[in-house]
Length: 294
Image (cartoon, rainbow, N blue to C red):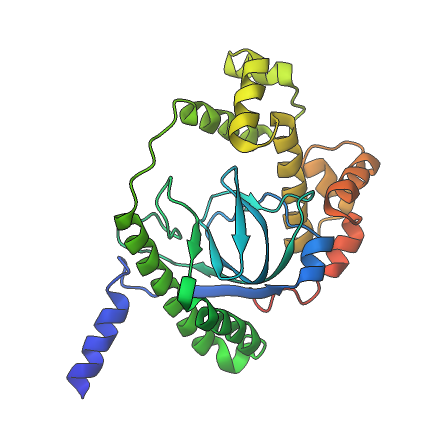
């Protein structure tokens, strides 16, 4: 029996290159009313992988500049360092669950990533969706008793992670690799600049000067490939970062505004309310108990 136990442990650790099991940082539920009232705009996590599961309903989700249609039974893989979020002006009728993990080191993949660059971030679970949905809901419910159930929830989330890893590998073996477009490198270059300078005073003309290109060509290509004009993308980045700061820090609203590039916090309040659907202060108050642990 001892030998069998060692073999089982070896199989569990085998997919992980460091010999260390991933850690569950947070688990949460996003009900339909919250998703409709307070869309979570573009944001990223530097050292965290999110597995976002659509339990019921349908909607859209943005990952790395591309908008995807999702429905019940789909996972959205949000790798560390990859922008993701919702379009505040798209319809959403989703009840979803999410597990956020760190210390994920799978063979052949960057830390805290579950897909390769260019992979489809949407995983359709098919006939497994019912059982996986029950598992994600159970992780969330058990997580409310962190003191006693942390180990159980972590083990269950690792099981979901490994199942997704296997589904993605099988899918990629069956698919023909996507041919890179000639504009992919340009769009990536534009996005990289905007992500670095979104909290500065950017205009289409200044963007063209910085990239040494015709600003109208930049705007045309970027909108064609991402669905957003460059300055729309900047606004989404600002609001997404503001949500993160309101959620994870105690910075005053005026300081949040300055951090993302607004000198006039009244203008910031107006823009935040337009995109998120509520004022920054009310949004912060709405987040009480959204996360079970961090």
